[in-house]
Length: 128
Image 1 (tube, rainbow, N blue to C red):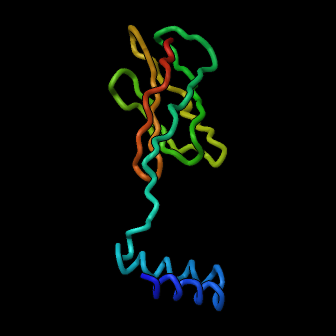
Image 2 (tube, rainbow, N blue to C red):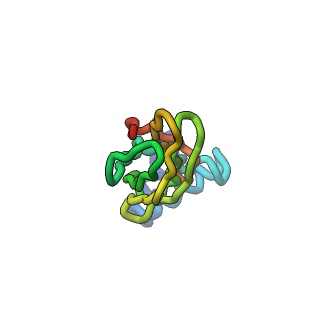
């Protein structure tokens, strides 16, 4: 154990911090393989927000747009049915365009999925 400590001190003196970091990476790869220190994105995106241009009757259409984390895939749902799927731009904006309303209640929700496959919770409801 003493020899290991002396060896590390000698390594630090002759190779500095970069040499110590290199040694740590080599030991990590030997111990865990190539994927041992890979960073995994497991944090889901925040729920998106959605808005409409105006309140409309059941026979009309409604222009819906929203905001989410940049470059996430945003799903517009009516109840449990996925109506549209759009990718948010680099600033997080997403436009669904005109959505035709059906007779009766039209409650819309949005969910987002990031590039790592993490799913957000549903947004607040947007009702006609």
